[in-house]
Length: 465
Image (cartoon, rainbow, N blue to C red):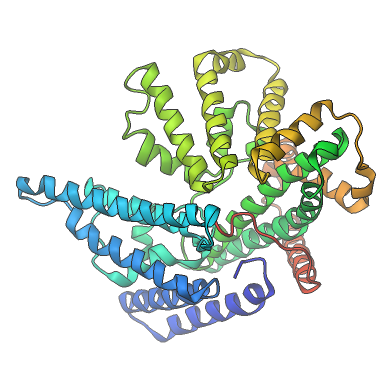
């Protein structure tokens, strides 16, 4: 089940909200109400995941039990002799988690094994918990129900954002639901659903058609059209899902951190990775880059650490050579920026050139990310720059709707927001603006539901990462 489905929007979510709030009103004691609320959310979260394959629900439950129990073995103790024992258990639990993830990633690529939905996300959440317990950054969660909810909570289960335990542990114990927070949640969900259904799905139709063509006979116009559309598709697909997840969290009293900050306005590749999938970047920084030494052990070690992190970032997405190349290419560019290019970009007074440089690199690497193999990726990129004409006409894939949505997609990727920033700060407190905003939400929500009812093309890129 995905958020952009009639089953979720019209049935699952309303039922979950109704049960959550109605049962909450029946319990007067705050502590008891929190237990009831967490139990309800855990039940519906497990039910949500079961729609993706009941057999894999057992896998997630086993991950929950291993990491919950393992954390007790890794937790700091007064006995200094336990250090080696704790380290052994930590390494064992990390190996079990990573081994499980690699088994499915490699099996999905080279075997007949189906990758369980959301496994990359909930595995990293479990790892962050155990590692933080080992270092004494968080206390062991003795209540299995609450820990299971942390791992399986449906808003962030399928595609993040990756939530670290230390950021939500207090919310598991006590959180504040209110009408205002609920309204903000609906607004965020509505905008996210519209980004996914109206823009990303429309781009996906074009992208899938173009990627089925013979890349060597594409022609420059078709190749550029495919690259631009996929660049927009993956942003609106993934950021739209993150918006929906953050909005859903607010409906139940949870605050999740932002996952995107207009990444296509980045002025360097380093800046891009500060803005794109920020929860993943933060995870690798906290649990891989810094433990390896970060930038504290000399330039050579810093470059090696970057290469390791982005190799693992590519592998996290899948065992395909395209993902590994994608990750290592980013590592190489970041090393070049750290060596000299970053300083030149900072000194460059014409920042639009920095943005063009960053966007072009990101777009070319999205071509690699999307392609079935490196041969196809390089063929498309070659066509973008030397394939003046081809067997296929770009006009065959263009109509008014995609052209309008491409323009809208480019504007809403941070450009329009930047232009209207000062205007927004002046009018946002006006009553008429609140009503206009509410009306826009309703229009987008209704339009999205109509498209879903009509059976519009509805793929989801990160569904099985």
